[in-house]
Image 1 (spheres, rainbow, N blue to C red):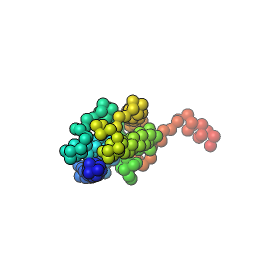
Image 2: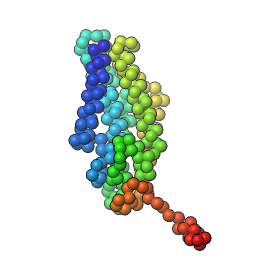
Image 3: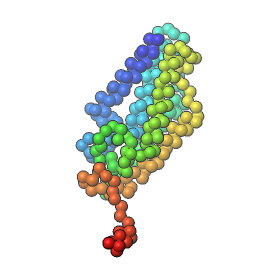
Image 4: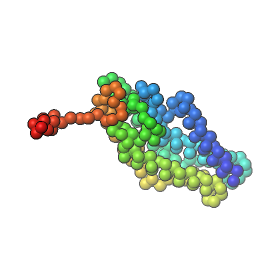
Length: 219
């Protein structure tokens, strides 16, 4: 049970370190010209899964060195794929951001300040988006399941040789599709933006000239 305590303490400490690094060095922030740079969804996702897996690894190592039957922890291929999905999402988002930054005439949604952490990671150029919300819900739910499974194994309630749970292929596909949808839609996130300074609070208004003429004629 000592390893279980270390496991949860390690997770809290890792999350605390991430928060401190974010506050001091913008660890989880987008590249932005805003005074208060918004949080990046992809970076938050990578930090979330990295903290969960590393905390489990630390708990398993403590169990091993305390002389229990749990061997040196090994990462199942499904866990590696999980981390790979998060890493690939972060890399893809970064490449897209660099591409947008090089287009000097384009005003990026990331250059707009928002009011909260949740709005930062859930919002794109048109406000809160359903694909970001979907991905967030799936990652949080599966992450909590992963945490409880590791706790269950470290507490000696399951096979002591396998600390990390095996993720079903369909679960990995679900996470991959969510991240892929996020990355695909991020490609067009700033393509239609034509904001002027001070207009970050509302999406740009696109006028239909034919419709405008029709309304003017009726008036």
